[in-house]
Length: 230
Image: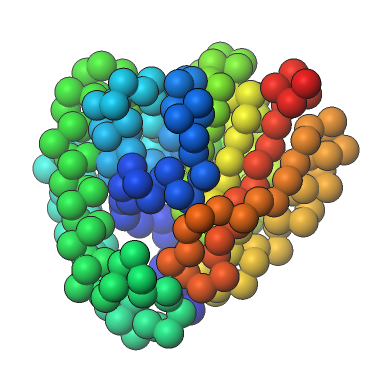
């Protein structure tokens, strides 16, 4: 299993987001919120395509050079752990550990190039769950990549409950990927979250997506508000 003690800055690309969240062209027409996006290039690439995206992360309180330093520190650790556990990954879209490093660094460099202007434009916001500085239903869709459920041991069930509720407050639809924790097993909070959200009157589904890098991590949680699902 991975032995990360805290959330690390590790970014993915626009193409990976499309597949992780089964995003359609129609999805990209709405107001999108990126949850704990870190140094992902989704915001930069989606903005170039004309989409409206705001990303939040406490990482954005730092300058670009400081973020680059944090990425460089995280990179060696993440790649070494991937190298030690290669059997846990599906090496097709990403064919090797070396390619993983190249693909991830390309995405993170795209983020870093966009970050100064995006910050000035208000597309990168220094904020963190479970309390966000956005109005109710400010967004049509919230995407949470590799944060909730992944860091189950580090963040705990109470945090997950409050964080998902907050995302449902600010967005009409929420999608979370993956459902696995760092020990490769499905997070123990998935089923309880589904039950709790359904009791609150929300429409919840677990859906297969066209993306699988960690073996078995090919499903997302999709939460719709009553108004959105009507």
